Image (tube, rainbow, N blue to C red):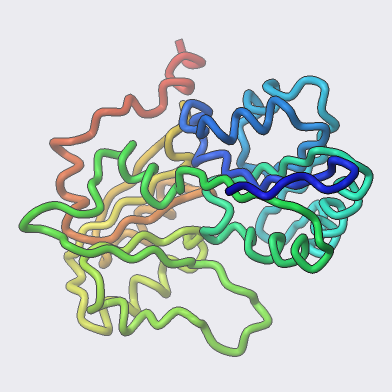
Length: 263
């Protein structure tokens, strides 16, 4: 049962906007977006989704490496303030709110403030981006398990919470989000802990969008290939034998927008 709005009608919906392609937005998410009074949105949200809420106040809360438009504490406070003023607030987040989206922190802040809230799952880039690159995360006879991990952690941490040594052996396929900067270290660590240097790797930039591009290689050479390709975030990395299936399963026309500009 969904949580009802407060006495003055204010509430917050933490809505997953999906991985990039606006067509992957959920029906429930779109319904709430169209009814919103306030939309607090992230950097990776497709602008076309904002057009679905033409009368709503828009607040940009985007984050990039080394630069946060608003601190997380400020975002939490904004959600609470607008809901207390009786507004229907949509917190529009790239991918899924509860998959490396800090949605849990925002939900806790709302619960502590006794603000009614709802969580609308979104299609995570961890599964959608590989699919658009023609890479199944599991495949009979090739991979029966996968793990999704972050390659970007708080720089104040003394040590990583990700046990890369264990992951090298624990899952057939690894999906690394926000890991482009750490890619050389990740690749070295996986190889040092038993993953063959010949393990296929794909790096997918701006997956599911018209500017999607994919760079493939192996654990042994992917860092150099990424540097030569001058890749920049956002990038999803897929590591495992399933990457080899891309040669036969690639279905999405990459770089369509770039090709149209060149013509």
